Length: 237
Image (cartoon, rainbow, N blue to C red; front, side, top):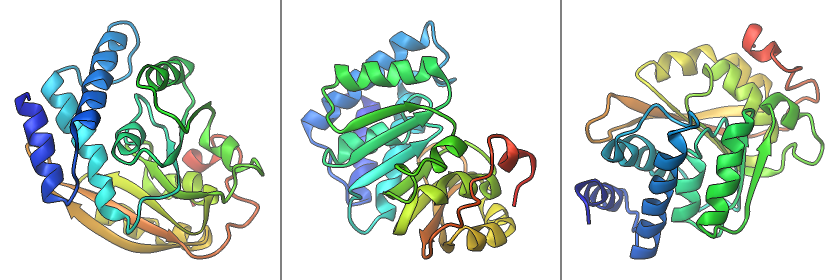
């Protein structure tokens, strides 16, 4: 087991998460495919193997500490190379996972790596989050929404909360400005049917200060939201 894998296993154990050899093998193969595709497709700026484990795998798995029970369904917005969705699927294989990105080259990779790893119950969509949230079949159907480094929180909640069922949860990892973003997004969260549950500091070995914004869905989202493509980013609520 490499040093990066040892760090992953030890840190996950401290969060109460257990990774078995099958899961570790899937993560190794995921890293292999990520490195191979990254040579011709810009999936991530992180290219060092140890940093893939630290900045992508460990950071993704940390979100499992913020659910009471594994969700039945998870939609990961702006997933890029599959983070945090795919590591969470590897951790909890029963999750029905939807990966969403607007860049076709990235979704092609996600289709490929999901097949290569033999993951079942993974759906990949090439779409903008605003488009998805206006589709009746997708709206208010998910138990959990995740989105990492996609947008400012005022924008992100307009992308994510329309997709959540009442009783569901949104997890948004953020940097050192998480508390300020959460305060600025308070009105938007309430308007969209959410409730700020917590802003939890997160300590990851060797990484800068981070926090996870936890938002619970407590009421249906008004049919006016999300607004058309591009509007949430131009005119945040």
